[in-house]
Length: 242
Image (tube, rainbow, N blue to C red; front, side, top):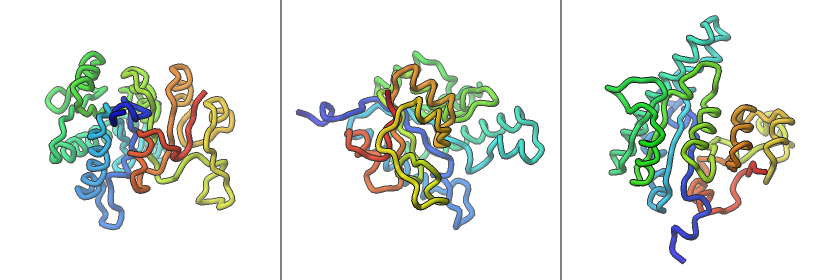
């Protein structure tokens, strides 16, 4: 059996938070060393012959919801957040290409001098050619999170799984930072995640994955070889499924 046949997931949508690209100690919203680390982790998976799409958040630069809480109009703040995700997408593209990987950035907001527009047929062709596709600009609409954008793109590209990279090793009954006695789920259904109002993703993202039967794996991106192990089908983090 070859390596490709051993893979649990051959086409994945990786959801990264913007915080994975920053370095708070150095005061850098986008740290080249952090970007390089993320890029190398993705390279390991691509070398396993996995087709990879990526949605990256913009929280290291700007959050629309936080802006609204400080008096910025919600729609305006969300568009600002979308632009932040495109900046992160370009930074990640640069990091990946420095490793010799082929990439394309596609955006939900038209900006042809910066990136391709999101066109599904073009996305699928890139994936077939083993190019990494980075989706920026969220869904292109305010009031939708990048988690929902990740669920949408995963559905459109026919991903075998949505991999939600976090700083925590799965989904817990409560925030494990605030309550050390919180219990971690090994598996949980979409409906349970929604009904229990678990905050790891929003309800729209859970619902979209449920409707399209896309399993979600929530895992600690910073744990050694965690991404590679998820793709190989090992039990890592929490699996959300039917």
